Structures are given as structure tokens and as C-alpha cells.
Image (cartoon, rainbow, N blue to C red; front, side, top):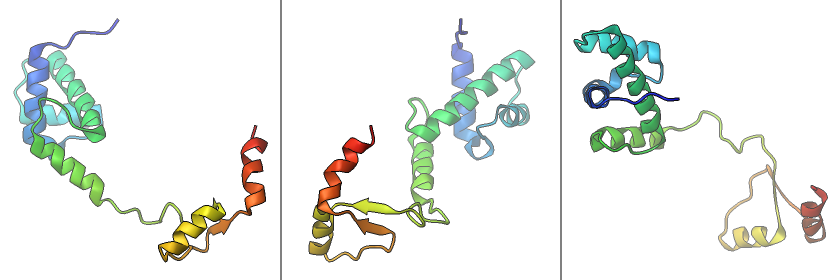
Length: 133
């Protein structure tokens, strides 16, 4: 069975995250050392519990908003994720197959087709779905 995290562990973890977010990672060992440096924690066991909960919260913060942690931190995390631009486009080198209706819509919007996009004939379009089974 799992363990219950006390109010002390949760509260102190949230405080450490708010103050030292830039030093913390998703790695327990690193977070344990950061806890040693920034806080006076009376026992090794308590330090490990706090570091473990910090690691857990850091993973949750990356996925989305977490209750009890300042919104400013979460906004920064969201902006960092939104500003990320991959070096190589996901679509570069991948072949995309579209149906004639989609091509007609793109033509009406006057968008050029990428060289990686091929238009599938309308007679093949319905068959492709059933052939996969």
C-alpha cells in the first residue's frame, strides 16, 4: 500500500518549489541536494520525503496547472512550453496523403501544397479504411 504524505511534507515542498523553481528538476537525486542546500530539514528521512514530493509536483507542473502553487510559476512554465520551436519540423520528410475534398478546400483558401503531400484518388479513398483490418 502507498504512504500518506503529511501536511508538513506537502506544505514545505510547495514553498521550496515557489522559491527555488529554477534549481529543481524531474530528478529525485538533484532535488534532494537542492533541499539540502536551501532548507534546514531535521532528518534525512523527512528530506527524502520532501524531495520525492517535489519531484512528483514538478512532473505535474509540466503537465498542467497544480493547485497550491503560485500561478506565476505555472504561467512561466506554460510560456516556456509554447515558445519551444523544434529544430526539425515534424512534417519534414513525412509523406501525408489527403483526399480530393481536402485538396479542394486548401485550393479555395489559396494554400500551396507541400512537396510531401500527395492527393489520393477518390476511388482509393474508401477502400483504404477497410484494407487496414
